[in-house]
Image 1 (cartoon, rainbow, N blue to C red):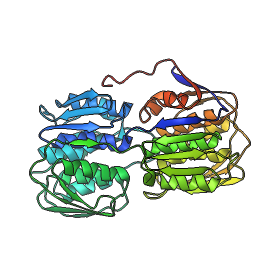
Image 2 (tube, one colour):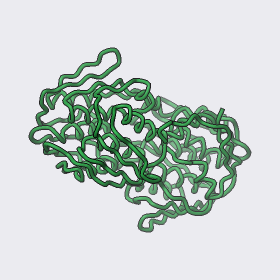
Image 3 (cartoon, rainbow, N blue to C red):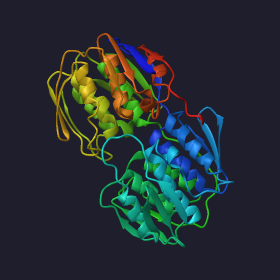
Image 4 (cartoon, rainbow, N blue to C red):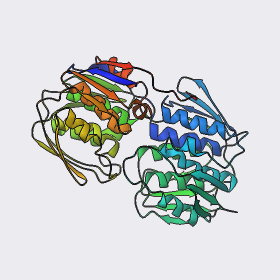
Length: 425
């Protein structure tokens, strides 16, 4: 079985370059299918979720080719299917964006309910509410979501809960609807802005992305475009947390510091030095950090995807910390693995109470989902002795060469065995 073998306790020092945003890439790739020409997508990370999307795009008859490392060219010419097979979509959550894309382009779509990490209930009711409001008939039959509309007509849609996926999916469908669509109580995450920018480069008319009200004026057609994906703030947060916890000094490069403000603020509160320099952040760990409290919230609050790595830092901080998870109800599955490494954590519902210990001890641990896997890698780097992290397929879904990047800043980390590759990478 493939695993990462880590000899912990080494301060991390040097420079690490952050790749493209995973959650932007898996929305922009299907968005590119809306255009009638070729789209060139830059700064695309070579991760398993991207590879899965390339497989899906090709299986539907469209073209997706790597023009160079991290540059992907996509053409919808040849796209001849509005149905997607379960064996592909079960691998990732973001496959549901094909519903909005195919509904806008062809007036119908058939996409199985999506897969992805098991981090709690993740309904798509707000997506379907939006499609219905635009005039589509929606049904779920034998695990397949079927949407169809003779014509889509713009309208006002109020999301009952703030949902990143629903905001993007409705935005995708509305690009070709007649008239104006208004999404109220929209999510504000940075990758929603990135998707809107890509759509506008293709000829769409999207305004207000990044606020809680987004307006989309439908257009009859979209063209291909060139678009560069924003940096991945969750990958950046992972390296920042590891640097601070290892008492190291790391320059985290190719980032947008504003996107990382919630993480930077908490690291400063715990005693780390954080210096923002244009497109980079310098992180210095100053001895043992202090406890703090974190509550995950929609952007611009503390990101749920950074909660699990942050829990590791709290596990070795001085004092008692509390983490309140308000987004996903299954986001503490890494806690039992951290306890194997000596962490003192008690979970009560959606809150984890963490009594900091002097150090963690290396142990064999298993990644249960993407961000839990990243957290266990960070734990191994901070721990005394040898840690073996298995379940690498989860980690590789969202981190490109995590072992290589950590080795580049001084970590003793090796990949042993081979994770079954995705054919499209």
